[in-house]
Length: 219
Image (cartoon, rainbow, N blue to C red; front, side, top):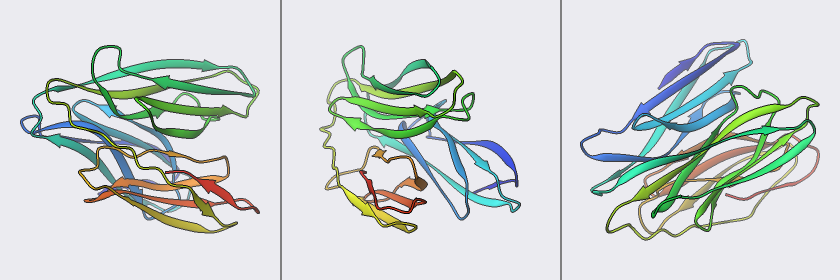
């Protein structure tokens, strides 16, 4: 657990043991009202940046998924994208060399006005969708984790469609038949992501609908 100071933006990182695990993805949970600024690969681990705009100190838990017992390697694909004002972008990150996309993320540290509406695995690509509601140019970074080597594990994506009633929050848990590798989602503007973290059997999301109408969340 970490402490996020009031009215501060802070980054927190956690690493895999280099002798036994390869980082594929990461997540976070918190007991308070925070804004996710970045969720991205870091040196043999994962880094989460959160902004606390309240007057109270918040407790934050950071997670990294480490793939154990695989002799291959994980490489990071990176794209820097500059968006015009009042525009939308849809980035698809794949593995340039042989391998499989097993996770992904983004960094909005230099783009405070941008809103991420999608960050998830679609086929063999990690898709990042972003909206710029401001009139100013904004630049952000997108990432995908590529797993390569002999004996690549079989990957299966599980998707659901969840209705979130107006002004309500909901916890959604997706369970895997095998070991969970990563978790992603698609969420419209107005649906706040309060938590996104791995569990022993899958992935857990907590979302809040801040609008007066029902919204659809797709984990």
